[in-house]
Image (cartoon, rainbow, N blue to C red; front, side):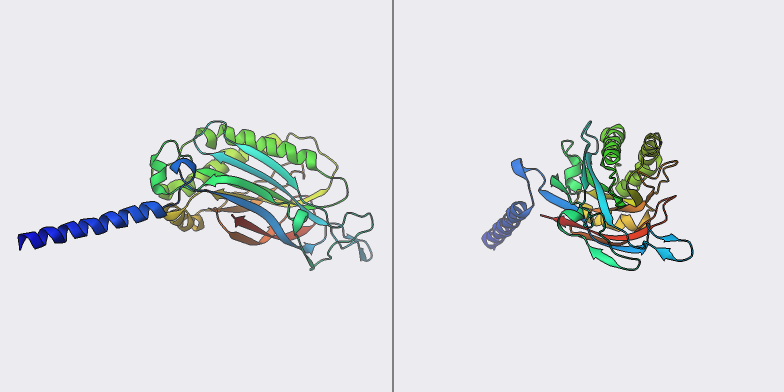
Length: 297
């Protein structure tokens, strides 16, 4: 009887060992056994002209067609890793670049593919789970985009966009790159939103408001998109928390380029679609609605 019990216990131990080894083998890892990494790409997919920026009405209205395009300012930062912030500016193609070309009229839409999407790619972003946060060598990475909805007057604003990208990088290095995550994973989203609303946006606004007014293409509005490099249980925690926090907005005084920030989204990185993204800007009469997509590879 005793021999049978020993054989049974040894068999159970073998089963548990096999299960443990299988789970370890299936856990996603990157180079050197660290967290798995993925590439992500963010870009516009369509635009609708709700109201035209170019429309002029005296006795009757003329010029109710806009030539919309996007400027996407991509950025990354690793929380708690000094000087880890990066930025990159992508100016989407103007699909109506001829002097007499007309874009969609009020109530009409256009697709934005290829160069028109203003695609920003974030390579090799590590995806962390709850257990990965215990290793001090792992830093939660944010991959985000400040997207501007623009209306082309064939003048361009790429210089201001580069200045804005530099400002974002500087502010991220002053805040999140030298910060830390809360000990409770459930508080990560509210903590990051708090840093945005209380630190990053005010610094960004005061810095950009000092730019001298510039004659260029009209900025219809903008939004911020904040993706977090998470997976597994931590992704579940982030996804559950995003609906309970309000994304901040920012009115940038005096100037219309860069545009006011009309909110945005914070989310776990992965394949996502952001539809009905309405763009408005103080002092600019047009209003556009964009759809964006984040893809993963």
